[in-house]
Length: 386
Image: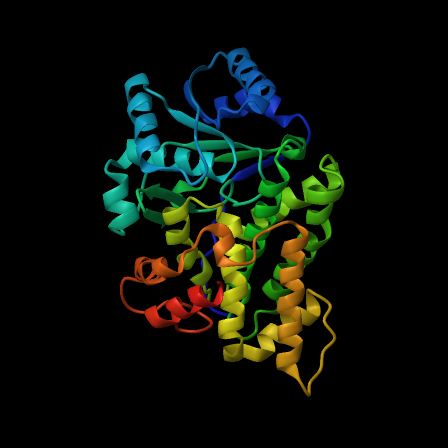
């Protein structure tokens, strides 16, 4: 096991009706004026009424900021930052999923540090202070409610910042709030959870048995409950609850401690999201299948373990590659059963863009923990996903 430092200070408040107590929790952090962030969709009306009522009950003033889209943009976040600065906001409350939460995280950095895009997302500096962020989670997907990550798009550029200072102070998690999420977004979220754990699980290190077991448990949980929430019973509380907590554990780095991590698929997906405005989880799913086919020979025992322990493929020591290829096909069929794309063309990737996508993903050097990949390898993976 590798040396590690693990810090996860977010307070998780899980269960039915907890969004009605959000004002009480905010007051515990000393805030007096809140900016609320959300998508601005009609189905949010009742939820927003409950949130606003809770804020008013606790004597908190607020400024509302809506119309946040998937793949959150720098321009929209900067609009929010300008208003928040003018209004003297002292806490940011994101009501939604990863796009809304990441917008709030970016605004928190911008207000506390200034020039967030150039200094931190592009410049690699470390955030030391930010306005506090709280969340009311409505989509089980990105894990942003507990992670140290934030992703923002500016034009065709899609950049991320990772740092513990931006973890939310608290996250309210009521699985009932995910009932209204469309099937496609629910499925995309489930695939995103898979990818977050893949990036940690496919490690070249040894003696990571405990986190292997944690990773495999999350994989099996998503395999069991995603089809229920997507196809069978969207209002099944148990399925929604299991997926909601799985999404958090998949990306708060519980599964990543003590091991070398990979992150190739997320790096490749970033320009795809920037170019085509595709759903993050859908893009990750397509690229995962291609990445697996491209790199599995670098660590055959690891892939055999994954497909036997997680997907139930029968082990065959005489033909381990056959086990792996059968497993990749089974995972692909699972994605199809959730009506998720499995080919690049389905998420808008064009053959003529592949070179530009690869260079945008990897301007120089190499990437990858399981296998060290260069620009040509990235091109090959993009071609393989087509």
